[in-house]
Image (cartoon, rainbow, N blue to C red):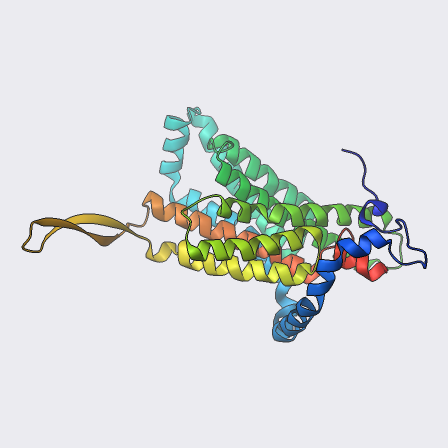
Length: 325
């Protein structure tokens, strides 16, 4: 892939006859300029509404990003024998290695999650959690599961936002010193984090049964995803995705009330008919476990979006490009 410098995003690119942007740029930005006044008003309303919690957004975002790893640590501890059985009997991993695999994963997830929360050695913590994502995909045989793959791309996107957020803080702490290399890294990681965060929604669109509400949510979410990727009103669009994903998570992944329909016979005087009755699932039922896993993974992606709301889209974005002009 060729190197993309600032000129690739219109910064320092060709100018019009009076020093403004070239006519082709003005035409391509026409639609965006038409909706900009409306998004500006919505952003102002959101800023006023969220003012009390703004100082806490980075801490909330970082905690939510690692909450899936903390839940996974507890899952391994409480389902130790089941985990060993699966790895040994189904994945054919020797006994000693299964113990080492689970223990190393628990230690890495707990230690790295703690470092992310307290903002210490974020580089090493993010690298450790990314290694956990890869090793678990290989160890549990989920590397070719498309839904798992897309979700974990989004989790990695959230971890990249943690990195860029930590570099933003370092830059602010040493504002009087040259930070060119750090700034460049931050820009690329912010761009990569924005792109990867939306893959969860891609998986949502292409999985499950279609309905009217699903079509509406898909259209709204797709528009917000495009805005996040190109960095146009990224804070507003990321907030919209946070709302959509949070509502979806509470409705679909409510593992605390998960139940399954069972067909039972019912007589109405005209022969036997079947009706659905819902039965509460036991604590470790696979469906309940999957719902809990999905719930915490979506929370992690919401955390990445909150960091995007807090820090902004970065230099490689339409929002920053407009500031230059």
